Image (cartoon, rainbow, N blue to C red; front, side, top):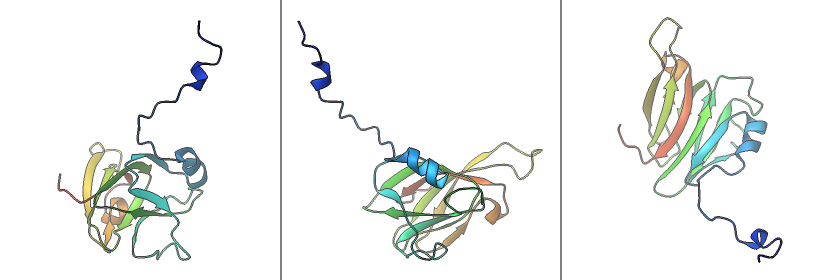
Length: 154
C-alpha cells in the first residue's frame, strides 16, 4: 500500500516546453505577450535612453501608447541561433542589433477593413539597421509574432 504523500515526493517532469519565463509578469508590467523561445532572445531593459539603446540590442518600437511598459522593447540575442515567439501590437520599426541579421515575422492587418485579409510577412532586419514595418512601411498595423536568427528567406 502506498504511503500518503508518496506521490508528492516524486520529482516533477523535466520535459521543457520552452515557455518564456515570467511571461505573466511581462504581460502585466509591459503589456506584451511572450510565448516561447529557446532562451537565446530575451527581453531586457533599453538603457537610459529607450529610443537609443545600446547597439548590441534589438529594438522594437510600437505606436500603441496604451501599453503600460511604453512604446520601446529591447531584446538581447546570444549564441549563433535563436527564436522567440510573441505578440507585440502596432509595431512600426525594428532596429537590428550590431552583429546579426534577424528575421521578424509579422501579421500585417489590412490598411482598411474593405481590403484583403491579414498577411503574414517575414522581414529581414540587417545588423544595426532600422527596418520600417506595418504603418512605418505604409502598410496596415503590424503585430510582431516572432524574432529569429540567423535570417533565412521564407
